[in-house]
Length: 498
Image (cartoon, rainbow, N blue to C red):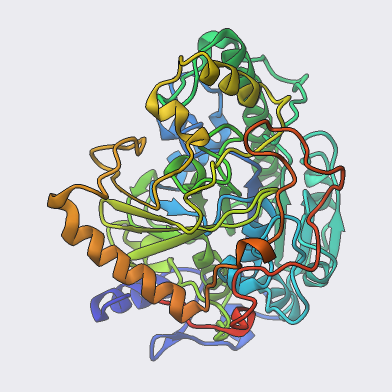
């Protein structure tokens, strides 16, 4: 939570940008504080969302070979966050969480292919009501109700970015705007970027939990190519904003919806799956340039932040907290804890995570089930299973195939950034474990989280031990119980500990 001194920091910061007026710690809602005319002077917002990309896969995050010059430049001229966490490492639940500022089980759409239910409050719609022109372009994946938050919703080509510039060029020039730019890059399967130099297996840097074979390196290099294409389009967006003369007063937020599509990354609650690249660029509103913020941030904090900077009050439905103080002081703190969840993603799952200080605690309601997700034909899955049969995997590489798994995991992420050594059974870490157990209990109770019985949960689409399809249906089977359903969590606004 923000202490009194940090509130003073926020007031001082907001008075210095955009002519905002703050009274009693709250934004003044009158449009006239920004200038003449409805919405005049409000900051524009461009939210760029990559698909299946981990935070380490950018030059500005320390990758030595991947080519991401445009995101790196945004970070150099803006602020890079090192501890920004998603509320889940899954596509559609992340997007529904992001647009509502709520945890997945509180959106009513906690599982893959779940549409956002009617009645949920969405921050783009709030902007739209006060005169913003709102557009979503590229990947969607939130259902039909969410489209009402936008003036325009358009698709995209191979990478999802192909109509982004058109949306900027065709916007009404007398309104502030929100552009929700969502890429398909770097989701499988791979599609080469003909406009850029491809990466090679020699460029690949593999973490210790991934297998290292020629096929795996080639596969990772193709993933890099899609990250590079997203970066290239990011550069084109920045160039267009500059050409139109609106770059300075446009808040650009660059992020991803979940970790890279490889074992022990996507869907999982390790940092490789749930920590997102997060860069904020806003020349007119940020006094710092090239700063790095190590403070904890959750993606449910994005909605209240954007609303605050647009001069709007948030409603009680938003469970996040504005990270505006961090833009003025990267050493400030807005929360002590971040939480995340892993629910059905073509297979039954119920895992929960809390990060506090240097520690990450993960609770697994179904430790008897291995946690490998994907088709048998995908390169990492196929080779991983083959090498496991030959006894050639390390303990870290074997993790997705473990059965049973640990019911609890505890990691010191400063000492063990890849989260390999489970400290849950170590006596010297018992106090930390008990503390995080307590806060996890509080969060689950206060937010109405529940664990559906296995026989009533959404069933597996793929066999966990072979990767073969269990049935031919696509999408999510209906009529099963989802987390939070029995408590009415979609109507619970309590955010739990922060």
